[in-house]
Length: 386
Image (cartoon, rainbow, N blue to C red; front, side):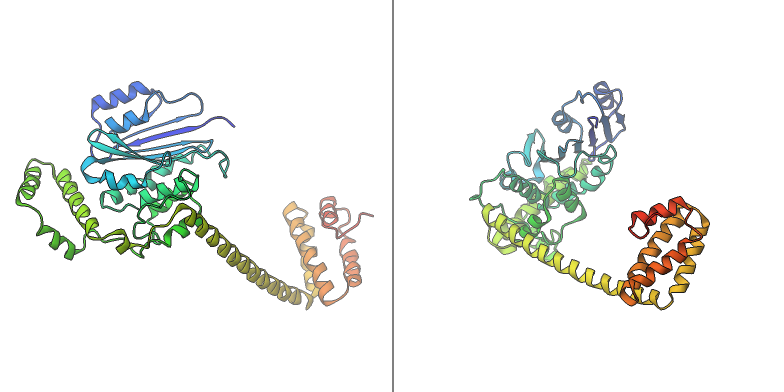
């Protein structure tokens, strides 16, 4: 299989200028470039640009996939909306990296498995990841840090974090992931049992960052000069910046009012999380085995009922098989083979094998020269060529 790489970049906060689009075109003559996006695919060669530079200068989101299993998702956030000191607690050496990009922070989620479980990706797999993952940016802007925790969890699962290290504060809502967060877990190949174990350290619902009672309490604490700064930004046409600045301050205040202990269970070590994941796996396997046994019992019960119905009128079943065989086409022969298999079992349950053999010989008399039918019944162990 040939090499395949997929690059996609997205501008969210502002469109690209004509000059910026020209600069991007200089990096690739094959890329699909619009005022908000840059997409390029390679089955040979490599991208001439530096994704880190493109994220710093032009874009707010980036997806990279290679068909040997490497994945990367990046988001750029305004510097004043992310408390780096607190967010850094979720960082790892590779799986989750938070980088300084001047007026922004860039968050990278990375996966580079030594042996990808699913093999190499297909060449159409990259196209929908941006739409699935980009909502994480708005979630982070609202103070929802579950995406950061998933990055740390991916690092833990791949051995980047020592067993005696404590997990970072588990955000509320790990039992109720958003679609984008679930997509990120898949993107990073986080095992479902690990996700379930981690959820045991989280409150049932994410903190509502817009709770009216909190808003009113916080507004009473805002100094007049800060309120004037926001009004200046609004009058200067910087409404988006003003909104994000306010949200960042409010979320920081709200987080300070609610300690991790108030919104989740005590922090656990990596070793304890691994142990929990093992226990979850064992429980899941027992439940799956029980479900398989129940399903198999129901299947056997239905099978017995079907065979009993068949045995009540063998002649009718043989007549239907005759009609199918007379059609002389492959699909009909396949139907006949299945019907005769069922008849053989029904005779053994409700009559005798000898009666089946006798009925089968009678059935085959007009069809014995149908080579394809004979082969199907022979392969099924139902008929011996004479």
